[in-house]
Image (cartoon, rainbow, N blue to C red):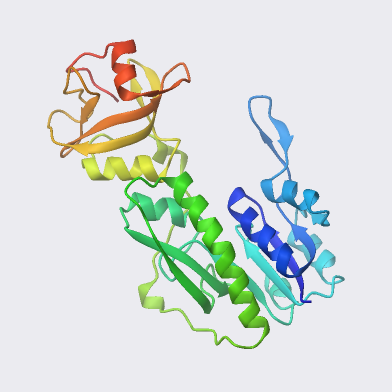
Length: 301
């Protein structure tokens, strides 16, 4: 059975590790170091580490690439599989396994190369995305493609739901691809550089909603950056979880209805269907209207 090292960190990588563990000999798991999380800033292990411990797998959390190379060179690897690990691998590591380093990326490459392909696809209003299994080279997400599979983006999808579906379907595609690759049944296909687009990391300031945008753009930002998009109501922060595009006009950010929670955008309007109140309570827009009594003409900023 092929000796595989798995590299991954967030929840997105968990289904892949589960399925690879069932099909191959996983000789170790490399993941990012534990990080402070929550109000108490307690050191918290990444989801991949928690699963690896439950599967009784050896876990490595190197701080530097040099440490990683020293670990890997003694493992007699056939292949390294990377799923959302979070760091660029140097050539010294890429050259180690005879079957190469294989990555699962949550887009149809060469579109949306980079750290945030799911968020950026949703924010752009895409109707279709997918998964790509590729050979890793020294350039970001630019290696030859081994397989791809489309995934439809539903109207109700947000970052959470789409990530979950892509991670499950991607895990299945990854294992099917590895079986073909190990049997010598796949020919890598170079990416078309002229079609490449990029998905840079989301910056903190992008979570603050700009009401001057068109209504469709506001909706897609709420979906893509779920559950972190926010605005201010009477000086207090509201997190917007779900909005729909409706007819209406007014000053950007203006509440334009006495009954439903409808807010004007740069063009068109959105109805806020679900949110997190200033007190941290998840609630429907209609309940917020009853509880906080926002007035028609008030502005969200």
